[in-house]
Length: 392
View 1 (cartoon, rainbow, N blue to C red):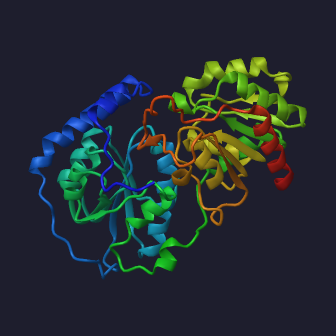
View 2: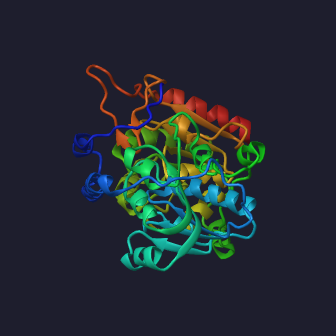
View 3: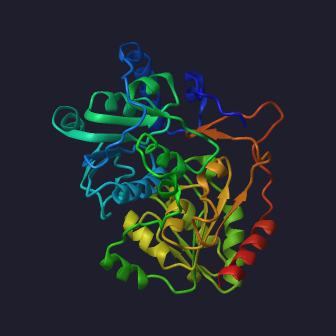
């Protein structure tokens, strides 16, 4: 697919996206209007072609709004920053819905919240940084905030006219590459050897020792974690399909771990009720913190999930992972084969060259066209069985 310089999502696209919750839709509408208001008052900053001195880079702010999946990948970007710069102090600006990814993690100095006005005021009027990396891909709010921060260098993605003007170094963005590679491109203004910058690196996610010990006692060794739901209904599998996968795995002698947020409690209670052997299904849905969920996944022999944040967390933890893609962009969200061990993806796109989502928005298909193939549960179970033979 030919990449456009700017990705156009209209105000009408936001209004008509019925898969958004009311709260999220209001936030996105506000963000869109904010961009229209500020665009005439934002003036492009001049910059040098590259940044030669990286020894003086000590105070860094990484901005990451959004959900768990992006945050898991940005955490790996932060690990890279700690390797490249000499003893940096890295602060993170995130949201309440994804801040659990960053707590307990090494190499992070302080966490600020978008949802806390005092934190925003402190960042604007008090804090000073050598570099601000805005990892948000498309929305306006983080770009506008970056423009008003006290920083020598600001770097972010050039995906909209306003975003091009707000950063000292606007960076190209691609829908055709793994997201961490896009994040690493934010380092392109620095004179860093590309072999060092883009080399595969070990994923990291820290779990507290006492939580690891707790999780070890909670589930049997032969357990498979399952989460085939998601924050968008297009990513949620019907329970009739999920229970067939559960029963297939139980017959093969495995236990099942159900995980997810509180919004999925009722659906997962139904799954356990429909399972042929209920005592082999362990349901922790809505009962754990994110670090506890990570510890439970870490104790499983396999994770099976849709294109969600927990799927990224699973392969970052080094757990064999099967990712099943519905509307999500597989090229953007699947890691390169030489970066992870024991990972496969199942693509349910009807047309492999068609992207059904851009920056979290569902792109309506053309008349008489659908994004997805009809789900063949037998084929999915066959792929799971083949994968299990390779990892056990």
